Image (cartoon, rainbow, N blue to C red; front, side):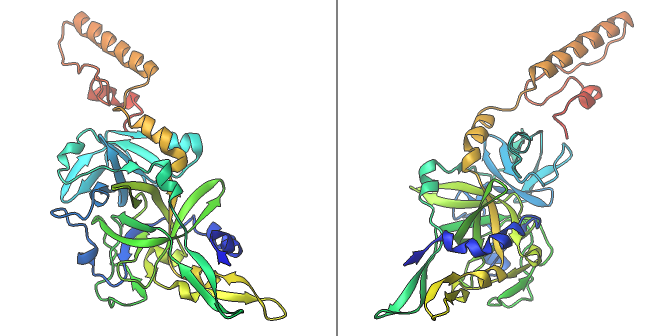
Length: 358
């Protein structure tokens, strides 16, 4: 008998506790910060070089200057993204995903994104890629007709990347509990198998567990907005945006464990009735909001550079006419910036009228 994510019903309550704890950085088991850090000279894949640091958190470049992050990451026009020692300022923030769906997701646009010379882009996974995802499954092991335990098959291998805290260099490489170094801004990455999925308050999450396997990754503080990526049909895709971790200690400390820690449950006659995974929830979990439901909306928004709303365009144009007439009447001349569709404005004096800078 095989048990998949359905056997985790006993821990649904535990998952509801995950959401308040925003995540911040990647720590990998059995690897130093240097080994888990993205190598921009010889990157392992384009998914890793799509991740940037922003506002002490993370974001992923979807292409043509559009980035995706968690909605709880604070952004405005004074914020810049950074990668590999280079920076570029945010031009525009789009809150459609939060305002329309209530999702902890946010898009933003960087006009000068090409100044980040190491930056790549990654697309949201197609439906076939999502259909191919498998969660960790468990199966009874037997000796004859007697159930003696269980075996498990790990789920799809997920690459996790973010620009949050790294590991404390004083921690042993094979330590099962690893504190963070409190330093953000450097992108680290690792891999973990897909543990399970969970729908909470109408939002579906992809969940990985920090394992005592070399390279297994756990998000910490600063990794919010980072990505979960999969390799499907010779292409890298993003499948989820990192939003939270569990338990609360996992914001600053990674606890690595094993699927062997699950237990069999028995009825009064001593016959196995299922598998109790509650012990697994004592290990650190990384949660990413599943992007499948939002793919069409995201792809429609990022298809073109952002432009002002029609009403705002007319308002700005009217302001330019009024300003020009006033200048002529006073016989004074001053420079007026033309209206440029795509986040440029008439003049710095008029910037306060625009909702594009916040």
